[in-house]
Length: 59
Image (cartoon, rainbow, N blue to C red; front, side, top):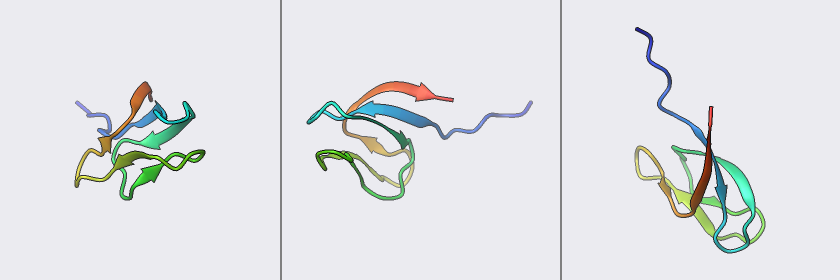
């Protein structure tokens, strides 16, 4: 059996300005909103700490 990857891309919505953007679920650096600059996700050594609402998990 071949296992699929554990990593995913996520479509998230910023809590500050409702901007939607696509991020990686295991970020290596802090991810900020492209519009207002608020923190969206930060690395934790494995799965990232997502600080906003996840709209969709992309395959």
